[in-house]
Length: 151
Image (tube, rainbow, N blue to C red; front, side):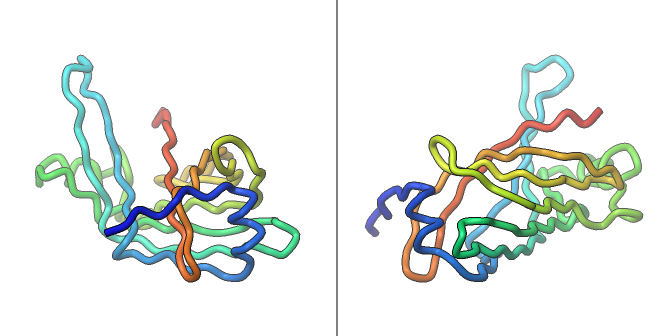
């Protein structure tokens, strides 16, 4: 296995114009939450996701990431049911968590995507820093991490 060299955001935008589709098998969305006392971190991941995006020749970027809110898995059935409930994701009424990227700007070390995040029926503007980890003729590897205050 060889590592893909890191690519700058400028290089990515310049060479990656066109439509892109998220590969669910090679993608992941996970969550980490500290417990009330901060002594333990609860980790989980979502198994249901899809997405697409478009990079225009002028460098503008739009896209959507859709996560199945009921697909949360923290390896604890009771906790997962609670997370799907009205206390958190409200998965019955709002089956999808959606990030809609409306614009992007080149930053350091990658891109800053701006858009909206919709969780449990609440939509808020958000900026997501995205690091370009690598790209090939048909693939792009991105990494993003964002903190969200559920209140």
